Image (cartoon, rainbow, N blue to C red; front, top):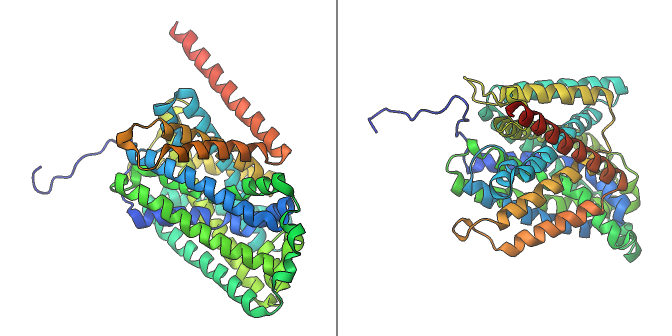
Length: 431
């Protein structure tokens, strides 16, 4: 190659700007936020103190899914994640099912994160919270529009701020004096929900671990993806599991499972129960920043999956455009901002965790099947992890709240029926 020559790229390919550290930060920004500030309440209602067992189950299944995603992304470093892996390893319908589940579930999660941010940032009237939620979606979509390097920079700041706030919560509860094992309520609260309750808590808490998918869906923008992605995904997951365990134990020791179950803001309740109400504003700021970090990474990940689906004709081709200067899927991100903005302005999605978990668990079940079918030369982890991952995803889907299961089945039915109609129309035009 002549000196100074730079390889050309296609107008519709993304630039590889991210290193291993950047990928880890994107994963942390996606995971540390939603669950640690929002999911402990629903999990405590399902399982009491048994949410700790549910957290470990969710972490184990998340690990199976993470290594499957890492192995697949290293072999196929392109945007789209399991949508692409499902198409390549299983078939087009499997790929579409995974992509549809990711886009629909995570679009709802975007709305939930925007509303979570607004509810912590604005204690005032509901209309003020809705307005701020819409503004946050538009602002972060505009940031993603300007390029992924700016996304990584802001994500670093948000992750640092939210983890600092969590550290303040842990320290405040430790020195408050009112926290202790007596607040747990003994064995009955650990087993109060039974096995079903613990598995339901695991399914709800799984919502918090799904951020590592963002690393895989952005594989087309990672330098040396075969080396960086298999490192970044497990690192981000292990850090998140450690943080969640510490915070969950701290919150249970401070407030007990019953108070957490009734709390709209579980960590605020925890510091107040520990006798340190002065820490509550720090928790609110941390929750708001963490929600912004999760929303930022969600927008980026959904945009890349929509780009991949549009490239293959499973979403409108218009969504497959890449900005000529900023090298991002700008049409997909504009459309996403419009949809999410409309949802947060009109619908209360604070109960969306179960619905999002349904879509994401289906997504990862397909990822595990795709990873199981990889040849020996592409394998980095044993196949039994893929089997465990599929089984775990299906069990957690079945034990989610029934409303979430019905909503998820309806949404998948609409998506699959819509694709069948589109394919039939295309076939008739060709004939």
